[in-house]
Image (cartoon, rainbow, N blue to C red; front, top):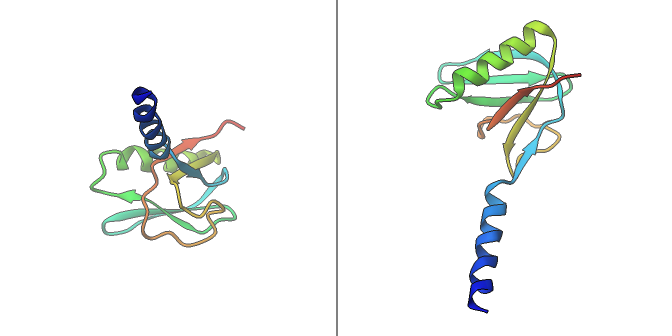
Length: 104
């Protein structure tokens, strides 16, 4: 019985660690590098913070955004849980955790 009591809280914690929100897939309209961070705007959405230059993954995320912009491919951007799922509000605070080029 004690095993089950211990397993349930761990299972609940691990599920919340993987919670995320994906913005709707769309084409990259603008890319704006600032002094210490990069923003992207997808078609029909507001500006989203892709990340800041201190992140090890920032160069890869920027490269994906640039490639998608150059080829007209759609991307999906992922944020931690609690982010505006419609991505219609300006995001200046939360770094994207992932950007993926979508196959249409």
